[in-house]
Amino acid sequence: MKSIEVVAAVIRDNEGRIFATQRGYGDMAGGWEFPGGKIEAGETPRQALHREIGEELDRDITIERLLDTVEWDYPSFHLTLHCFLCHLQGKPPVLREHKAALWLTPDQLHSVQWLPADQSLVKKLSEI
Image (cartoon, rainbow, N blue to C red; front, side):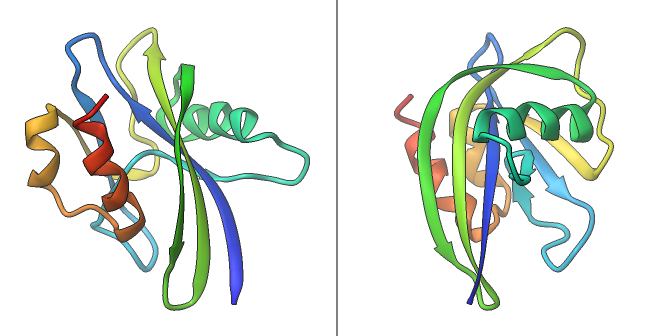
């Protein structure tokens, strides 16, 4: 089975809301996720996350800490997902790859349909 290693930014604002994005492309289009993407050769997870958020949201982030690493088996690949707690710098994000985005309070996190690998992280977010 093919393995993919990716990073995700759990972006929290000063009010404690979490930034959720809806995929606009691929097999999982329409599902909700934390923004991020694949780690490229020679990159650390933190470097990849800075690059991905720049590409996807046209913003820089401050990475606070690693929240969790999720291992998930999808039907056609194994995913290793490194999830970091982050804060946006500067202006609001610009959606370059996603269909939609929402700022959700911890109580609202279950109001969207998260992709399977992201679902396991949602429970932990109520504890941070």
